[in-house]
Length: 377
Image (cartoon, rainbow, N blue to C red; front, side):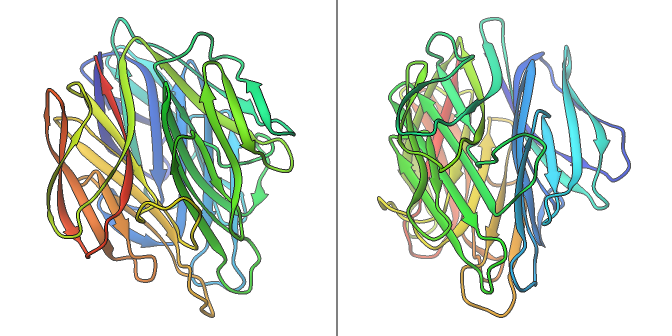
């Protein structure tokens, strides 16, 4: 099995982005933000996509310094999708898997640079399938078409659009992961048209779909069992949920907590990872939602690492404050939603036969729970 991670700049007006690798990828996990590779920008634009033959992506956006709030979400059967705060498409790309890496052919590019982060997975034993499922109208068990036999790992992007290529009001940024019985998810939402910012976030182990509601509570909660999802809470109308299923590899999902001050902390996996995917809402462990609008997704291999973080300020102010931050030095960043600064940050300093070690270069006195997804051969 082979794993690679990295970041590339999406320049305005380009027709094709080429990412060379020393293996042929079987699947891609892609996430992107409206900023340079290392830096923070006001205004929140981003998304998450999967590619393995078929493609599916979700996108979200939130305007900065406006009143009332302007937020939107959208989904498409493309590998990369970016939108503005009204839901209009400003970035769309179709990834192509190649013998020496992958390329993205652009039908639309934004007027300013965006950054694309990726995890590429390959190897002769690895099989992958990408697609989307539709949530049910009622709670209970619902099969997921396309998963086939139980995968080693399933990644989900449950941001909640009702259909492809149709913008919806309200931001939702969400990610989930399941490796057998071990699973976790995180999300945040930001309401559209609110006089003052109204945000909510949630993170939980034991479920692969964890989506916060606009004003508290959970909008959707589901656990993956075999080829089906057991829905404890469902959206009021069916929603599209892109997924990526991987087989022929070792995978494990878990949660851990960062320290209250800078320092190193080891994460025990049970095997030597070839790479890790990381995500967090940046708060301590808690069973229910909170009024924090923030999500970070990152990844690391022995050769590279990087992350993207998106947030919406939660305080009652005359105008919104939104941020997107990208780093090619850290695997996790917990942003200060008030200022765009940093509460905590960590880089993966080493891998060993039992797991990996995070070097927390910043921590402001609070434990912050994060989710790790370990990938091994």
